[in-house]
Length: 364
Image 1: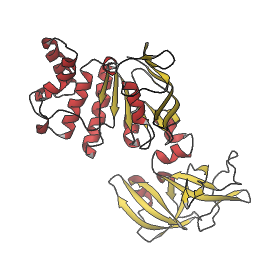
Image 2 (image 1 turned 60 degrees about the vertical axis):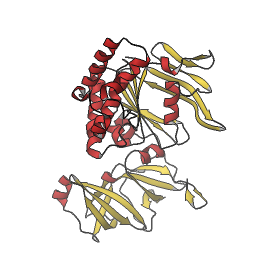
Image 3 (image 1 turned 180 degrees about the vertical axis):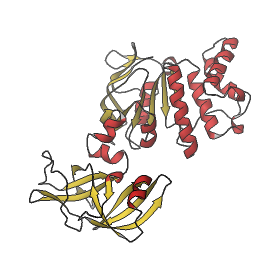
């Protein structure tokens, strides 16, 4: 087990600064999911950890070992960092058998032949692929190829395992299966996993802790999944994690009113820390919009989609279209409104944020 610590990492490509004074700690024996939009610097951070890119400043340590320190001029070569890596595209060699693919990192390290086979087979057993040792990748499914890639990362006995978008290319069912596999493998090995993704749903299913990066490369929020969902640090986290609705509101006569083509007072508490003198949006999750016939706030059902365990609705609220999610239990208790029907709605657990500024006709 080993802790990974990034301290004040600054990394640039030419004149573009991707990461600036970035600090993050990945605790021992945990899965930390680094989540953020494409281009925010997630892969750059991984390249710095693996030794594939040299940061401009800062330090990186794994346990008691300093892998990089700009001030002390320490930069351990990539091949000596002993970190397992699983890429998005599997990167298994098509002309090699499963066993040969997994054995390759050990051959590069000139490990004795007898030991290579023993360690490679042990790694394959961990991912339940030992019976496929003599198969070629073309004979395997996408999920099986990804297991081979994980085994190859495990074979070097790394305390740290980095996974960069490892399940993006798999179908929905295989993604679910691989997330369970990754969790079980990590539990057996007691390893530290840094999981990189832009898929927040996968991150929520897998992680012990989550780190949210903004597009400018800064660390927006760090915490467990409940912290991220129930206590978002700002508007970016609220909108990025999960489906959310943003509805313009104003404060009138000490009550919050909708400001989206209809003027209706809301039965919600006025938060003391929100400045309503500037344009304000109310943020509400789709499962926190509740159908209520007694509510004075009326909207129109545009369309609905049945997803097996819930209904998803598109609702016209004044000049805004919002999303609503209704569980099967609620649907049975209160009924399923038809397309075109007028419904009463109320809002639960709303949050309030300054509206995005308009620049050249676009919100920023």
